[in-house]
Image (cartoon, rainbow, N blue to C red; front, top):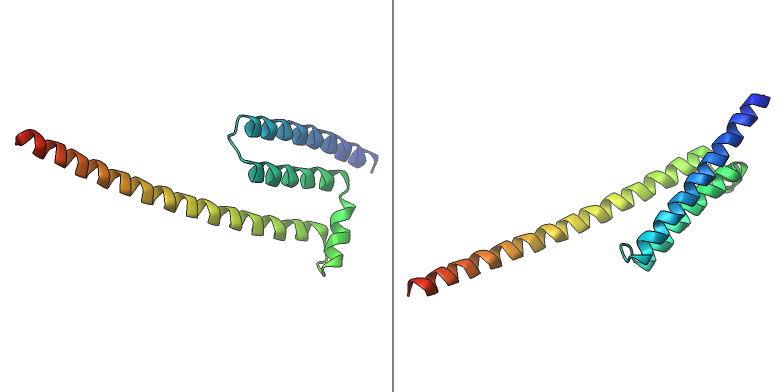
Length: 122
């Protein structure tokens, strides 16, 4: 039992260090305008929740029972899956928009090239 607690404490420390590293990377991305404020807040909240869950795992069981789910880990899995599906949906929409923009640019370039060639032949 004592070694099990020791291993979990090591896991907690490593995870907190990792979360702090991720906070730093998020901050750098926000400062160099790679991500906007909404994305910055979203990712800070996600990693803050990860840190809280690792430091206070009994909290997930309490929240799970509050909403009628037996175990805390089940609640985390359900929420994670929902977030992942949402993110896949957003990525799909973004890829579809990029695809439409590429098609429009390709058509415009082809038309412009055709017009230049016809002007040169006159």
